[in-house]
Image 1 (cartoon, rainbow, N blue to C red):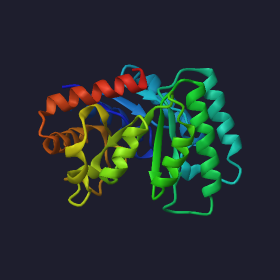
Image 2 (cartoon, one colour):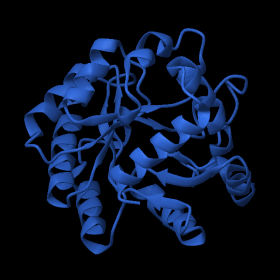
Image 3 (tube, rainbow, N blue to C red):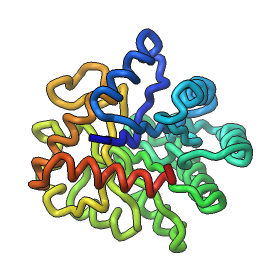
Image 4 (cartoon, helix red, strand yellow):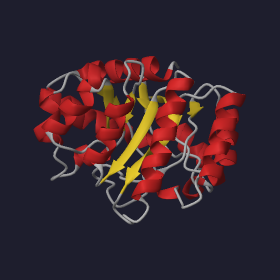
Length: 255
């Protein structure tokens, strides 16, 4: 079975002791493709080094995470744009809005997201969106930028059925991760009404490990646990869900 992890920070410092072992465990678990979102200037080197070490498995994005947006974010976005002009990437990301920790930088986060939405359109790339306690604000900016060419994924989606419908109407995918396995994660209320063509699977490792590893370091080898939960909620065979979500990821990221 071939499974694609559409969002994994496998280059993270948390994997420094066993990064290649984690990659081997992923491949043994059937996770043959891993798409890696960038965070900011500090994560670029490690991400590209891992991509160079495993070019058939790991594919890099380029973007600026909303939690890395500061008052003077323009320099970091200049570096993002420079990299996008320099070589191919799977996507722009991860970008978005995050109001969980700090609401004082909303205006800067919004401007950074607008710029990255424009970069995605300029480079004909999908955009990977992080939205935490800012779904309505994120959707408003995507709607304003949508000209029929914008595509991407709302990663780590854990919203309502109505919010899922908004994402789909925008032409975006839903990234489903470990939260779907949580008792009160809400996936049981959303996924049964969603077609497979709208879904991607992800770990967001090292964060949000699925049950029974909740609270521990997440890794791509745990993605089959998410697959099992999604297949169960959809009433579909695991192999069918793996094939469909891998096909969706390949088409979206041009893998």
